[in-house]
Length: 273
Image (tube, rainbow, N blue to C red; front, top):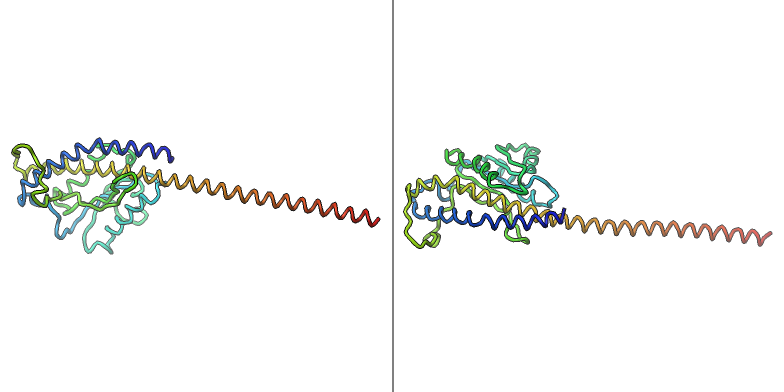
């Protein structure tokens, strides 16, 4: 399992690199349209000041045997959606991965929609299905904010659990945020209307990127966990072998002592006769 996970890490990293041009491209188009729209973008851009209804998307694995990977995402998600810590905010929960289903079912936390069966090798169609479950709620104003709780894959040695905003779209902070272009860009339809059209495409791309990074993080965590399990098994075999040898040596020593004692008793009996 350690070797399989190690091979999957390389494949997952290649998929992240392969998807990067599209993800960066749609982010650049979105940033340019957002910079052009400015204050006319409405609720599509920015961070809600006081959101009352929040949808949370939690991404974990279908399987275990990957150390604390699943728990590191599920625990903060649980703290976020529990009534004791949500400051009166109404939370709706969408999960990816079988481990999330069982985790929240056991704790009697309602899950609106669940997706599973593809966390180790997600496809864009999977991301499209997930985006189709979260985007309409924001566009029809059923929720004020959409958050994603998942593991970011920074490198083979560093993975970080993050809670980040998916919707509304990130707002450019200034002129430096506007992408540099070599020519003049004209928007048709107007940039505010174009932003609304770009929202589903952006969510699909962002969810796909999150799935790919979560997949790479899952394989990395599993490789580490299986390496530790292998080392622990080797240590266990070594310790038990030592205990067995010691017990066998004790038994042999006892038998030798009994034989020597019996021989000495026979010798003393013969001498007395």
